Length: 263
Image (cartoon, rainbow, N blue to C red; front, side, top):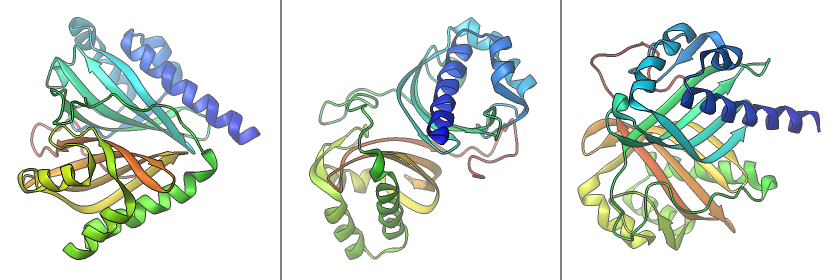
């Protein structure tokens, strides 16, 4: 019961943090964030003071996040955010996965994210952020995470035949797809592959709560070195829905040297 209460508090703190960023409220952020806050967004300086220095720019553009989904795994919280007024990040409207790590005192100590511009609906008419939000089956968390770890091991190391078998075994044939380039179902995924050229090379972190699992991995997208955030919703042991954010990993004009990984 004590651990459950602690984790619930962590999720509530993450929501309060996003509200404070939306309001450009430095005093609340100071109460929630460690002074030596580690930043993995390559364009944001590390440290709390330098992060707070960005608030004037965010306020000028009316930059605000609307959290669509939030899951927690131990001292990590994952937020699936739709950012409006996001020109400082690269486009007026962007979708991101924001990951926060809390320290032993429940203070935000580290942040990772990946962002991409909001797109028009995909071939199945789905957006980057719509779909199921309810967290169910908390007792399945460990099993679901292990299934995703095994799936990505095959996607990274398996032969073409093994990959095809793994996709058929792990995905519902008519699973719901939110990637902007692909239609629903395994057939839609296969049809998009030649153009999108998703190549997974290393899985860095897997976080989950109940029926939702987030995989953070590294690879190439259309031959560009990229980070992949894949959120999967599992149902009866198979993947029923998929959201993702793919961001090219920058090499110039970096605000910190922490990399987009380092979990």
